[in-house]
Amino acid sequence: MAKPSIIQTSWYDHPQYYDLAFRSETRPEADFFEAALRKYCSFRARRLFEPACGTGRLVAEMAARGYRVSGFDLSEPSLCYLRRRLGRRGLEAEVTRQDMADFRLSGVFDAAYCTFDSFRHLLTENSAQDHLQCVAKHLRPGGIYILGFHLLPPDASEECTERWTERHGGTQVTVTLRVLATDRRRRIETLRISLLARTASRVVRIRDEFGLRMYTAAGFRRLLAKTPELELLDVYDFWYEIDKPLALSDELSDTVFILQKR
Image (tube, rainbow, N blue to C red; front, side):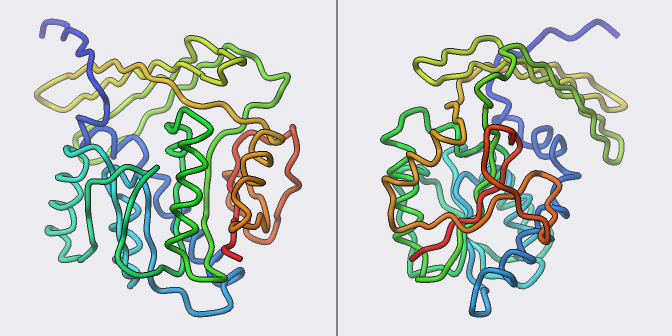
C-alpha cells in the first residue's frame, strides 16, 4: 500500500476520527458533571447546554442519562455527525449552528459545560468576555458552568508535544499535538495537530494548525472580574475528583472551573 499523502485540513471536518480521539474521556467527564450538579446546585438540575459541542459525544451521553440537552457549534460536519449519532441511539437533543461568543437559546438552563480547551478558541479578551456573559444570561440563578481548559504557568516550557492513541472496533487513531509557537505578548499559542487513522482498508493522515488563547491563573481571574454575574466556586484538575477541590495557582495546568450564576 502506497504511503498516503497528508491532508491539510481542519480535523473538525473529520468528525469520526476527532470523536474517537477523545472517546475514552466521555464517561469520566459525564460522571464528574453529575457529581458537580449534585454538589453545587441547590435544585435538581435537568436542563443543560454545551457551547462548542463538536461531535456531541457529551451531548449524547448526557441525553442518554436523562437530561434535556442543547448543544451548538460552528462546524457543520460535526453537527451532522451529532444528529446522526442521536438518531442511531434514539436520543433527543436541540442541536444548532451558533457562535460560542454570541448565541441564543430558548429559555433558561440549570447548568452548562465546556471542556478540553474549546474556550481557548476564543482568541480575544472581548470574545471570551462575550462568551461568559452569554453563558450567564442563559443560566438560572444558582446554575453552574463547568469550564475546563489548560492554563499556562508563567514558567512553562514553550516546547510541548503530546501523543496518544485510541481504538474502537477496527479503527485506530493516533494524535500528535505539537506547540509550534508561543506569543506571550498576544497570548496566542499556535498548535499543530497530526492525526493518523488506520482501518483494515485505508490509512488517512490529517494535519491541522490553529491558534489558542493562553491563560495564566491571574489572567483568568482578571477575565472573571469583568463578568460579575459568575462567581468562581471551586477548581479541579482533569482527574475529576469531586471531593478534592484545588487552589487556583500557577502550579495548575489542567484545570476545571466551577462557576455559578449569582
